[in-house]
Length: 542
Image 1 (cartoon, one colour):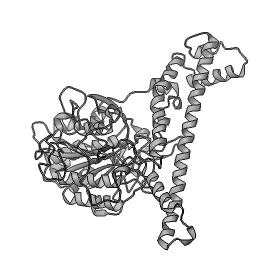
Image 2 (cartoon, one colour; image 1 turned 180 degrees about the horizontal axis):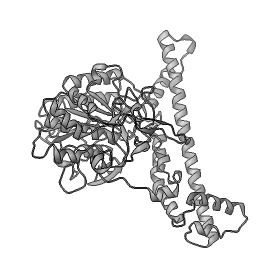
Image 3 (cartoon, helix red, strand yellow; image 1 turned 45 degrees about the horizontal axis):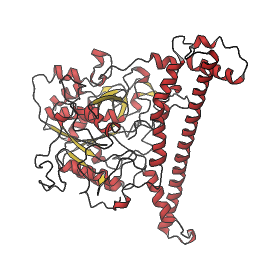
Image 4 (cartoon, one colour; image 1 turned 180 degrees about the vertical axis):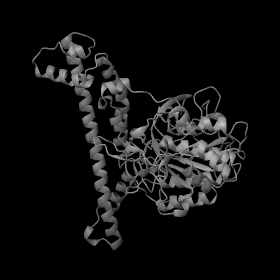
């Protein structure tokens, strides 16, 4: 899952005032563990729980499957908490435990198929567009059957949505390049006019030239610097240049891969979305893309990075084994891969499945629903990210979901993201929400965690909030192992830090400047933020 749908706009420093950019208060590191009463932040009270409720107690190991982009199994903060398949002998090229997967020592990747290891993928919208286009290409539309007419009507909707997304992305990219070019050009012109390597706000006052180009540059940088006499224009330019490569990569990847109907990385080796009876494919490559592919590692660390080892950061859960399942590429996941990943996790002992991904379209929801039902029957608790589009998913789709199954919903937790800020800024500006569809919120802004190459970084998204909840659930299961998945969800829902009556800003992309106020309780079923301390106290009473 993309951390933000409009990632490029958030990367662009010019969308922020310089004053807010320079003076922004940083989030406390590891704030997700803090307690509101003690620390003043709506974390999940992890530290308080361990210090007051769990001190001297021993829990049982809980296996948490992280279905994501893969994870760095060599990371110093993760290698000690990995799930290990005791029935498999590493590296011998044999399926020792006869589970259908060769050398699946720490998990599996469903993005490897007959020697092809997938990194970049299309959006599901793109795949549907390509499939429908092929189906109706060259057909006489006057001779369509009743079913074909129904499909063609759907194709028209898909085509319109695809073309709108493609054109919008190209337009944003062109605007971005034009904006960057203009700002850098203005900087160079003003610096040359002033005969300085750099300049500040007060230097602009000395510009007397009536040349309209120089005047435009003066006006633009006056707006950018906003009267702050301490910040140099060079700082702004360096900020733009540092972020520029990431922004450019975001757009080019989206246009070259995500929205490219000709891109099909597994087509030449016979991969078919419709082949839903074959789940025994893939490889044991736990991470692809190296340092750039940190999403899955980040999620794994939030759940279970080794606690109290004096390096990096601490995960929420201490008695956890992380099962690494790679099924989420840079683009939309395939339903076939997700269904296979869910079944693998359930068959190999996972008690919780953490899923920080989602999409607006689904090729075969029934196949994923069947896998969810299969796993829940084996006692699995699902924890899923609500998404980062700032939209109401009561009204709009975010797959996978359990909207059509009350039974499955009892063991499924849909998670929105909260910020370390209190008051009206509590909900993350990007977080999806839904009074019926989102169960609870959890810390998901400026979360520091593990990334590949023994490193750490700060990410934001419902992707980060989801492993926080998975970690909380794992602690409850560890110390109260007789509780079922459905009971654990019920406990987490009833023990939230309840903030139903808090007036907050409604999450949305806010590019148009619109800010709407709502009650926090309208954004989720529980109207609160998950809390480990409260959950453990409630579990003790069950």
